[in-house]
Amino acid sequence: MNSLNQSTSADELNQHRPLLLAHCYRMLGSPVDASDAVQDTFVKATRALESYRGEASLQTWLLRIATHVCLDELKGRKRRERPMAWPSGEPDGPLTMRPPEEWLEPIPDSWLTPSNLTPHEALELRGSVRLALVAAFQHLPPKQRAALLLTQVLGCSAAEAADMLDTTVASVNSALQRARAKLDSLSVEDSPRTSAQDKLVEQYVKAFESYHVDSLVSLLTDDIEFSMPPIALWLEGPKRVGTFLRTTGHGCAGSILVPTSANGSPAFGQYRDGGKTPWGLVVLTLRNDRISGITTFLDHQTLFPLFGLPPQVQA
Image 1: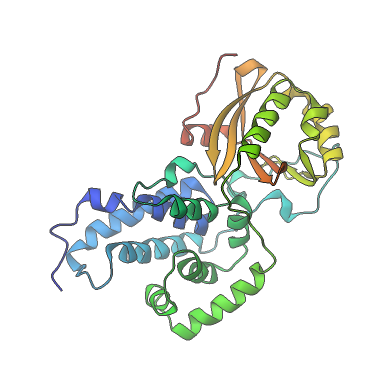
Image 2: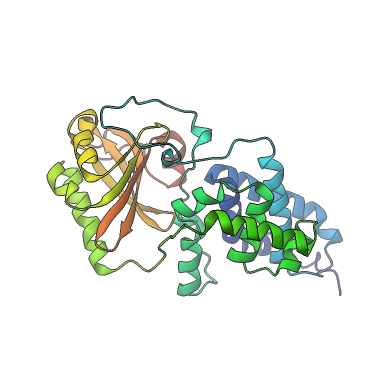
């Protein structure tokens, strides 16, 4: 097969950026790390173009490079988690801060919108980066994680995955069996948002900006999970969430929410003090006609620029 390096341009490499970003994000659990990994992938690919003969598709070749970049990055590194990795707490529990690099962080949906996808494919892509799902991936050993993602998410055969991971088909199948055993209990919703859920999100915004805690609590499921990384405390249940908002969290009264989207879910930049103080990126998880998860990522210095959110807003 003729070499393709003469006709492979930076634009052609960039066409694969959204898919590579999603893959690296699922591997690493951080949008910043994923972006760095994709950049490293393109540098390595550009240097190796002369040796690329087209035996595999350009996408497969780039995925191979990106996977190895991620595996190298994961060597000796702690996995990123969510607060729900620990037992739930009480509204008056200690607000212990842990290093930001220990936490899973959200990725902007705007990074994952390749123009060549059908609506169904775009939905599947967003579903594959749901916070709960990516958090579960982090609990798999890196090579198990890679084998699962390459085959179950990206649709590679076991033989293709084995070639990309420099291992055997038997090893890939064994890794898949162990990975599936760990993830069997996980159920992640990836259906399109309904008009009723759009209304639910509007109700949430109205209740939060007016800081009507009773109205806000009425929108939550009985098993709502409420967390604020990098604070280790998380709360379960509408009663605990309501108590927290009325006491420790009362400083959120007077906040303004600016809409965005993250991990296939509705999200908001939250600004306290009538828009003067950037506070956190709020990501909602919806289940049927209720909100089942509220995660406020407090690392606004990192996340707001990634999501194109301004440093302040006007009321």
